[in-house]
Amino acid sequence: MRNTIDPQYYEIEKGSSWPTWEDFLNGAVTDNEGVNAEIESFVIRYAYTLTIDQKDFNVDNHVLDVFPPLFYKLTYPFNYERLKPLVDAYVSLSVVPQAQRDISGLDFDYGDEPHTWPEMQGFIGFINQAMEQIKQRNLIPESKHKITNSWLVKSSDGGMTSEHNHVQNTFSVVSYISAPEGAGKLVLRDPLEYHKAIYPFPKDSPENAMKREVEVRTNDVIVFPGFMYHSTTQHFNKIGDRVSFVVNINCDPHWVNDDNDDNETEMNPPRLRFIT
Image (cartoon, rainbow, N blue to C red; front, side):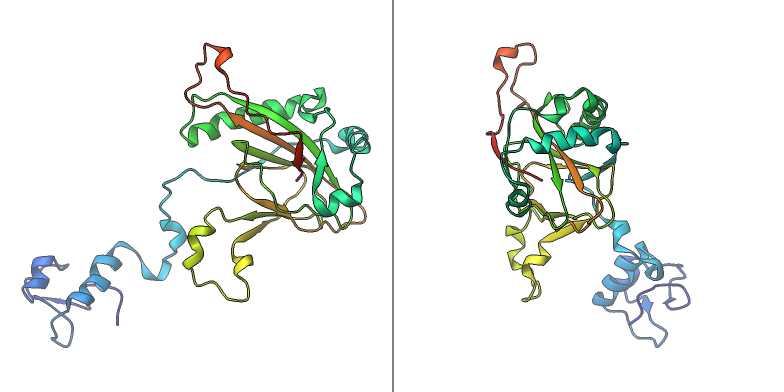
């Protein structure tokens, strides 16, 4: 069956260069063999194909972008050589051994949050500007945002982080101060997982169908909703460590009165948390 209508393929008895519904219903549209076109053919050949060029058709060009995107990938010029002494000092104060953190992804705060460091204020200004646009896209432009906490993660060769989310936060920002070749990938779980239970995914890989791996490099900044489950693949690089800087951000509820600071709702997560 042909999927393109053109004057050479159809004989239009009424002299019209293209068929109309009236032409079709009155039997004026026939193919070259004199057979009246059928309704099914009309829908396939005319109502659909006149809107696209079949040879160049790409469904990616016809995505209906209705809702705000969930993920943003930005770039910021970190200076790892300058930050490395601070990173090493930070990691040395952790109460959990590095090997255990690499396997379990569990860590504890000790109070020194990197987003408060003078060396990080350039980045904090950058992400604050980005958040204004992200809030606009998410229809919450009037909401005030604030950083609830932050931490650094240094993954050595073989290190990885187990799956978790930051559900008590509106957005999470994962920045890669150092991500050399072979750095563990960021793995994101599909938030529509439960709704896609009826999809006929291959029986041998339903779990993989729900996850997407994102390659990361030094200076990448990934922003996504706090409810997103994510993890990492193993980091394989004996020369350089993967160092990520995680910032959690909350947006005040719309009912908060901007003129009355006493009404602001504190939504800080607990001090025990998962790392990225």
